[in-house]
Image (cartoon, rainbow, N blue to C red; front, side, top):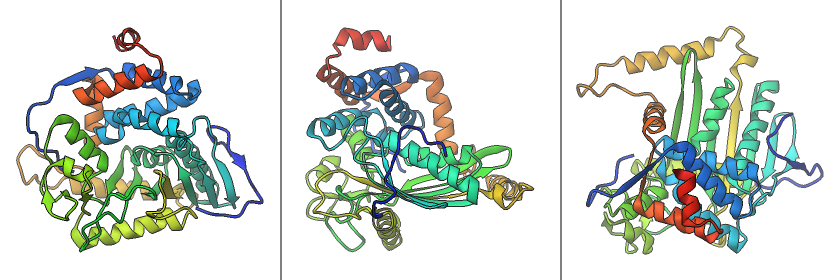
Length: 377
């Protein structure tokens, strides 16, 4: 089987493992082309110790998150990644290990390597197994930040496969369960991708919390407040100030008790079923775990009926008369594709705080302001 990057096999080892923010003022924004922004991030990550290939992979995934409008999982993460590298909780150039493997199952230990690299390797492994057997399950545990979860569903869809992905963060409780007031769960995102005959795939990429924690970071960087119902403060009282979250508050789950139940089950699937860890206050570092299931319809549906039926449903749903004139029904993934096209053409907007943080990150690895300017010119 083909996997990107070296993966050490331990055959005898036992198995383990949205609504927009409310702007207070119009923020100052800098716009950088996606290609140049990727060059800058790659230079920073290489300066922090990653190989050229790893640095490019990290940069490509982070900038792609910005391109599709998921700024919370984009280049604002660079400074935090450098902190984790320096304190030893994120390990550059660390290949994952396959600690259990069968024809349809693998448990992969990320060994605290970069999630952008480990996630791609695990996804390619799942795609290869599903192509051979029709279905596969990959448990990825003990991994650095995996970035935008939809990346892996998009990869599978490009290979003609349906996929489901459930992710938790064992060492970063951020969310209050329904009926509770303090942090007990991670944001516990999930992503599902279904390829569609002759059209773009349907890609759902959501957190089971009201919003990804990174979106609070974006709002705070911009001086914005957030909508009611997103967060509570450290006393469990509703608030719209993102600073209250970082002062000990908590995110809420989507859909009240329904979202809380979905969050708990996502935490169990990603943490326990992978032989990793579910949300655990004893875990002191950000540790991503992901359960992924891959289904290859071509193994049992040579006529292509599955993808054709997906196209029929998506077309039927999108043909619904708009409730608001000029706002047509969208399929999962349409907003991201629209945003990608706009930002590819016009550049990636970065608020002043994110841009300053990137410059500081560059300085910290020996890249001076003149070189930054030359890279993004």
